[in-house]
Amino acid sequence: MTSVADLLRDASIRLRASGVESARIDARLLLGEAMQREIWPHESGPVTPAQLACFEDLLARRLTREPVSRILGRRAFWTLDLIVGPDTLDPRPDTETLIEAAIAAFADREPPNRIIDLGTGTGCLLLAALSAFPAATGLGIDKSKGAVEIARTNAVRNELSARAEFQTIDWDELPQDRGDLILSNPPYIEEATLSALAPEVVQFDPRDALSGGADGLEAYDSLAGVLPRLMAPQGIAILELGAGQRSAVETLMIGVGFAVQEVRKDLGNIERALVLKWNDTGDGGLDLRHLCLE
Image (cartoon, rainbow, N blue to C red):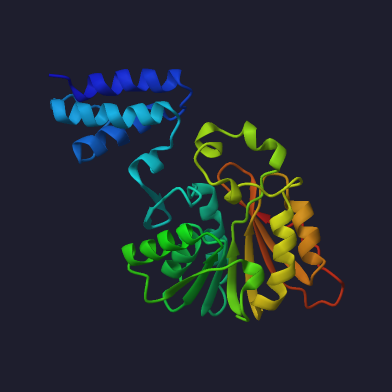
């Protein structure tokens, strides 16, 4: 009978040969799914024929570079267990930087009562923020009906549905609302560079959730038009940034009346979360570019 150790060794070799960098951990996760339990790194116990057949089916999908999260249909994000689907971006650890920034932004003030998530996808940002601010209610919007259905399911799955509302609508069409905290992870990849992304991204994430147009800034242009009417007077907005986009996005947001409170880096040392507040200095835009926290 085949052993766990033999399977993990063989699968890791095959995955690395196909270009998968996280070969060993991916093999463990897929074998765990096949055996319906956690697999420890140095296990050597037996694997039944039925478990082996299931594992080979899962492994064949990963060898095509389908992400583990999409094979399993779920992804851990912050403290949440989320389902993912073909209409949603696969939530990534980098995006958790926005939740860290939100907690820091409200550390010395009253927590937010109303949270708005623009382009909610799986609902990961809104639901994580609601878990961090237990007195708040929130609205997540997305133009994809499929994404909104998944976000609603995730709210129920994580026992947050009583405080979370989701609507299928473009953020340009959102009726009047005021958020104490506004979150958004907009599409920001330059259209011409999409084909160079990893197969896990370009082949399996929805293109609309990736492409930011020719310069990667189309969604930020749109956000600059809607944020001023959505943010409460003492509110905070936190936007995810692509690598190297800080200066351009800052310029857009300062131009519509915001000031930069913080720019927070992710674990890869990329400037990832742009924290905005209203500019009440009367100077046409407070430039706080020296404030960059890790």
